[in-house]
Length: 388
Image (cartoon, rainbow, N blue to C red):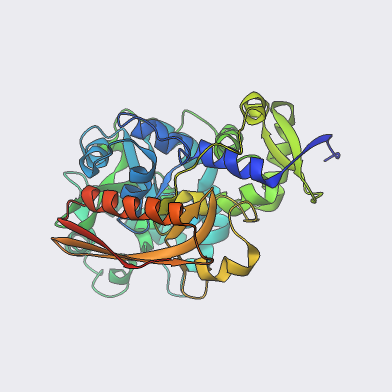
């Protein structure tokens, strides 16, 4: 790829633009949760509470019932495994794009490392396991345990070699997800439940877009939310190979503009259609501090996290050894600390840990945010365990 002519911009402008695109500068209206999920390229859902607190941060007067209704009654949102093999909630109308763009990523890269030596052969999968799972789910969604029991009753020799495939870590259901056969349905007694795609979303055609078109569309969606960003950032976020990300940017370059951050020679890309809005960014606009949940999508959009956190604090937030990404305190778009919470039926207790001493006004705003979080969680009392 040739070296493009790139505008040089201050890091603060990059961060503020990113913050605005994530609805963390100005909240969306409460009726717009599907559009919010679309704009932020999916709500991370590995931890059950994360999408609810993510939307509480972004949507005015959001309630948990609004998300549940969109997921399980209207089915305008859908939960499934997408980027990097992780659970996300996306608009159902975009399922074909995400499915086609990321299917190969799972089977040829991430997923092949998840198989143990006793994993079924491809012939067993295609002739026995996949068809039997679809038949078991023909009438209604089932939990893992229910599906495992149903499978065992349908396959005479399933008592040993196949039972472990219905693992809580995804197992065979992750494969059927990436094949476009199954997805997450409404939980059954607080347990994850799974449905057939063709039963849950009968009007969605997964073949309406091909793989190349889907990847090109996914890149543009990504840059609309996470741009300006590099090819490496897109690869890290999506799970695609860096070579694929570079090729996609080269193929779509006519729709993109290049920028560089002051002091860096790395090329970042954004949509040409966003350059006007980018030019109007006001780095002096007041920003309310936010309490982002674990694995919030704002934390996972880039390989280079310079725009949101100082290098010296990275290991306090991103903890790969234990596979954790902390809940974070966001001040002026940057991570200023971490927080933890404990909730009972009547009380929310929040422990705040800031990396540096916060000013009085920010502390007051954080206390207000904790009280609002308590109201969202419908507890009678919200308490800060420690003051930054």
